[in-house]
Amino acid sequence: MRRQLSFCVVADGGTDRVLVPIIQWAIHKLDPDVEILEPAFSKRKSSVADFLRAYRPEAMLTFLHRDAENRSLYERLQEFPQGTVNDIVPVVPIRMSEAWILFDGSAIARAADRPSYHVTVPEIAELERLADPKSRLEELLLEAAGSPTGRRLKMFKRSIVDRRVSVASLIADFSPLMALSAFTQFQQTLAEKYPFRHILEP
Image (cartoon, rainbow, N blue to C red; front, top):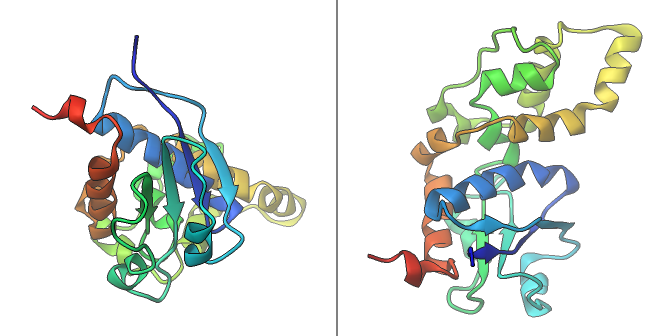
């Protein structure tokens, strides 16, 4: 029988659904043959510490998201006590989750319904230094959509959250993120906590 993996994502906010395709890609990078079951997603309503105190596993892995925002990656990771919960994987993008999907101009253009438009995106090395990745992504989506005005602009803005999530789902390869310190840390922790790691070890 094929290996099956269940996981859930507990995030800072509802728009952090952009993390789901990234997590799925990272799992398959580690274990190409695993079947990933439909993930659960929820918004964390308390601090990381409060969540961990009340934590009851609902899946084989829980990806607990925390934006770094104005703190360093090291400082944010200190909110996750080492060794206390074996099935929790911290997901701490520098600044915001949107920084991890800003590298693919083609996906942004398709999410804006103009697949032939060329979107100039930040260099990978810039992503962890962007002050507001979410606003930058929205600017690029609007630009790709042809900078709509009036009624079209209002309609586009109403769909902007769904379009941000669409960008993530339209990216087939997240390997450029392996150049980022926060993503490398995430991958390393995933490998350490992965429930089938004994099968994958040579």
